[in-house]
Image (cartoon, rainbow, N blue to C red; front, top):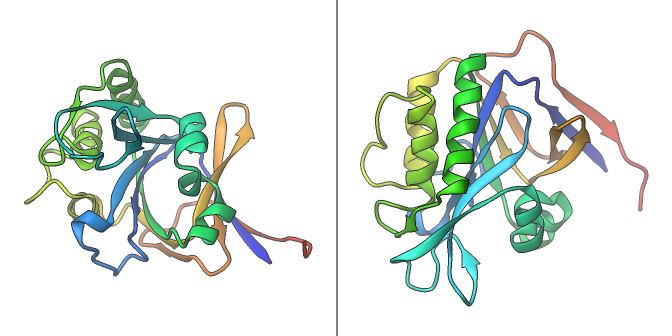
Length: 215
């Protein structure tokens, strides 16, 4: 089995739409959830926190306390979002959109998420959901200059960023995961079948392919 690895050099941040099978797939809103990627490659996301479960939509989807997931919380509650083998086992395909940004934009993006983690606000399925909060991080860091066009859905946010930030983006669709790479960095792990489209190829290649021994 071949494994593709995406390294992050702190010049990109990202969006990951869960349930979006590839760049051309336009999924129904309630089939998706959205997370983000810091400039160091670490995943982060906003969820509704109920007493019975932690989910993107929650039991009722209204008036729950919010919670921001970091990598350890993903491993505990949404392992198939960050573990490549678990994603494949559960059929969890995703599409990531990596956006080339300035150092200040990357720092402001990270700081916005840290502020949301400290004060996560209330989750509502309409207007204060995972996509709404991800959008705020892109707006407050001035990567975007306005809110989501239409309903606050993961795919609408994806399409908005794609439209506004071309040609400085890369799209990656398929089974993906993350792992710690040391020195505060993370790598994105991709199944060999993953679809990688570099609308503007980076100056230096940062996707490498390694051959894993059979298990």
